[in-house]
Image (cartoon, rainbow, N blue to C red; front, side, top):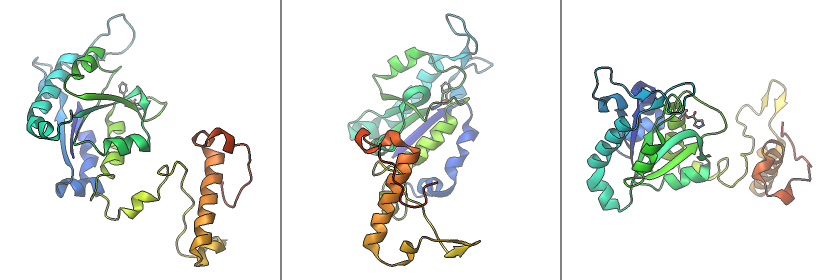
Length: 249
Ligand SMILES: O=C(OCc1ccccc1)c1cn[nH]c1
């Protein structure tokens, strides 16, 4: 998978050189390219923003530098994108996007080419997204109901969530199967040695070796946790009962 990131703070994306994503880049599983939006300006001050029409505080990102940056990326990937037959996905982290969830990460992991646009200030001129629709599948996506100063932190989160699902990136694919949200429930509690730690013991069931009962206990834990912390994830009829099945704090 190729991932291009456009930003005015390229150094923010250095985290993508580290750990599993960094290893996948070095192994060629992920082709991640970082672009400085200011390289697509033509004035002496490398201007990327201006005041908002209609007034209001803050600044808006000008559409032209973005269009030049995106055109350059589309041109550099044209052969590969043509071969894949699908338009690249333009992924735009923004508070006004649809909610990013594991299901969205799974979907995006199937794309051949992602282009991530990191907005700053009050956002990007809306016309850019209208213009981009001819070249890209445009996806405005929110990490959650809070506001960051720019899209870079959200881009790191989304790239990690998507990148780790690309085959070969995570060594043991088994660890991708049983994880939070993959079955729509929160993950069960996990424990490791020592079995007794500061007078707190690991639940006996986990030391029993009875894998059937362990699986059942873990599923009960998932349900109890999801009920208490994220009832919104459960279908309506299954929320009223509040029996607990062990440590669910
Ligand atoms: O703040 C966010 O993105 C940065 C951003 C982009 C455009 C204008 C302002 C801020 C964000 C919050 N949830 N998901 C993304």
